[in-house]
Length: 235
Image 1 (tube, rainbow, N blue to C red):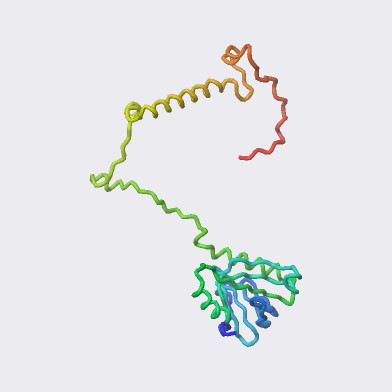
Image 2: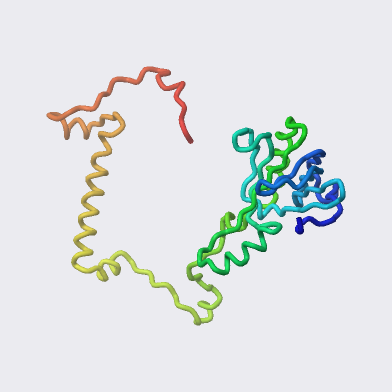
């Protein structure tokens, strides 16, 4: 195919992790021949006996896995999905994309079939290690703050907007009648919550006994020693 090129195989300088000879390469169901697969930290490469081959950049690889489903493919292999087009298919897809308004990402499927299927686990592990060295920038958490920053230097020079702070009394004066009513209701709920804490967690105090002499009492039976010693507590 036209996309096959001649290039030197990756070596130790490029962080070669796995070199697997006698590996057949298949692209979208079409066999490319048998050659050597090179799994390096910099790229994934395959070269046939004549020195022609291709390289895949890890950021373009969206999926890799060991396939043992003989119904999907007659031999066990390393499956690699790439967000790109290769060979004649890439030329045909250009005209199709020009006529289509859908933003469809191109996909190519590679299958690397080693003659020794016991090497698949080592090939997969090497792929995982190398892929981890090339994280997707879109998946990384951003530490950028999108809000407005308080410029200390500018405010010291009187060039910025100084935030407005209120005392409790000043804040009340700025509340509407509805806001003040809401605040009073919340304070009432808070005071009820505080008063009820005497009867929480199975604890009886003098206040709780006095307030609830005619009501339901909390069980104050002493906890048996070692009752929860084997409990698994999340911290």
